[in-house]
Amino acid sequence: MKTGTPLRLSAIVVLLLTLGHAVPAAAQNAPSPGVIDAIPGRTVDSLLDYARHNNPEYAAMRFEADAASERITPAGALPDPKFRMELMDITKMGEQNATLSPSRVGSTKYTLMQDLPWYGKRDLKRGIAELEAESAQGRARGTWAEIAARLKTAHAQLFTLYQNEKLAREILDLMVRLEKIAQVRYAGGLAAQQDVIRAQVEQTGMRNDLIMLTNDGNMLRARINGLLARPAPAPIANPEALRPIPAPARLDYATLEDRVRGRNPQLFAEEARIQAAEKNRELTYKNRYPDFTLGVTPVQYENSVKEWEVMLEFNIPLQQSSRRSMERESESMLAAARSRKDAAAHQVLTELAENLSGIEAARRTETLTTSSLLPQAELSFKSALAGYENGKVDFMTLIEAQKQIRQARQNQIKAQADAQMRLAEIEKLLGEDL
Image 1 (cartoon, rainbow, N blue to C red):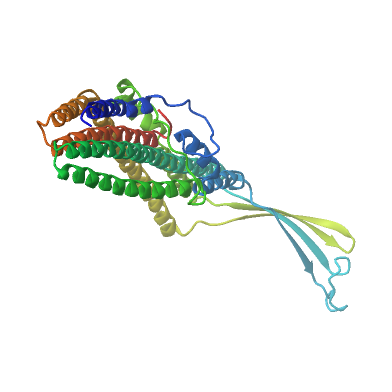
Image 2: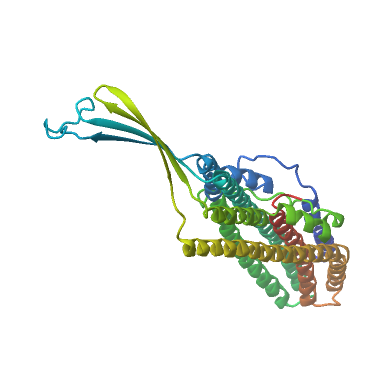
């Protein structure tokens, strides 16, 4: 019984050291982007590709953008012409019964009229419609950026759960092995029965953790399926790896600030609104001038046209107080649009700085954990294991050393996921992948 114990302890040490390097390797060996899986979830690109074609919220925004584009042509078009027919003297001074036949009445007027807005109004209306279409396109891009960020974050969270679940199963297997060792030592009178009971308690705790992790994974998969417009119980593949984090040189604030100002969907939409408000203000000032209606009228007597009339009609802009109010309204709307863009720019740049700081902190935490904390925890476990074998430390010390390794690995996994979520937020602000 005593001779078998060191071999089992050596196997446990090898198991712990092997598991300690499993997480970083999984994060580095990311498959090439653009792979479409039968069951999405293996890579974040598979989720994005599925959502791009199936998410109803994004589809609705695309349709709204298409509808806004179709408003451009009618916005700059002339109003439809109007036709009027007037039957004059339908009783011929009382000489006949009333009739609606053009050849039997006193005369018939056929008037064709066309409304003509003041010069430049049509171009302004067309320009406003174009800018509103651009704003709708920006909102559609913003919707997709938001959906993509949520999917990227959910994929990172699912990776965290999957890795923690694997880690919990590995630790559970380790505790089963440690229980057997404690039983051997207890049978040989080298350890107390409490060591065996403690190992069993730890196993029960690990099984409870697995139940919670499984439940969290099911809820997260249901959330992902909601974004993909799939049934909630539909299968989602386990994530194989995370995307690589860009080098620190590509995460420079000054460089990304310029890109955010030029590409952020929200700022793009707000800029289009400002330009539309400027054109609307100009259109409002043009309402000081009248619109016209031109008409031509042939007059029929019996069976022939013997007269022609030409008509000019225009509105008289006398309601100056009303127009001045509308002009002040357009000025206020323009100022409001500019203020909204300024507020959005400040918010977006603040979020950019926060996420850049967060991704750097996550990177440093992962490096520290991988290069220092995890090796130290493994060394501590090896020492405790040797001490327990020789009877110099108790079983609780061994358990605490094992918990330090587990905590270090969880910190490593969490730092990787945090970096991915920060990256997703930065890409949402940019409106594109880094």
